[in-house]
Length: 282
Image (cartoon, rainbow, N blue to C red):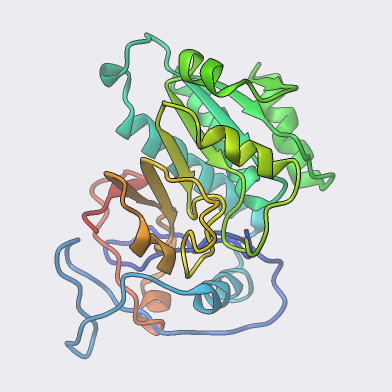
């Protein structure tokens, strides 16, 4: 993931990104507000954007850090919370056979992996049973703290990735928290074999922000990426979401100020009530 995504609380907002960067410079952009998920309009009366590319996603993240004074751990916590809520909404206990649904969360070394660690903790509090496979851990304190929190909540960490057959038999859902916003080029070990294994499973895959193996703007250009059943975009959908063909596209991380959305000429649907996620119809 590159910078951290933009988040939103307001009735009208914009879409999101995948990786957070540490704040370096201050930048601004143009967004707009929307009335409903069906209709999007900007202040000038024209149509505003529903997706952002990598450059605008980075700029928005920098503004959230530098101008709005969000911290990385704050954004990661809100992102992981919205991911957990989206998974529990789409794959609710009523729809699954197990009384306590089992979720395998595969985490990468960056911020996307951090979102997965946060999501595991919240899924545990929703009475799901999350297991985490985290093969390449970050030594940064923020990630070590997230691991410690999961361990103290008795979330299990796996030493090895189960075979595709075992994953299909033992889990209801797999949460892809491997790569995100900043991924480009070839997949290096051990994640090349991990993607191959996940492409062979028979249970739904949910990807955070950008399906692993996809580029943020071009999608699965190299034909190495996952094809998830569910995509959870954060703050504002990235351009690659246009290539997503699965049945469930959710948006989460509702923290982007309306002024920032208007600045980047981006629209997002109105979130109902106090929910942290919303299902998109595009």
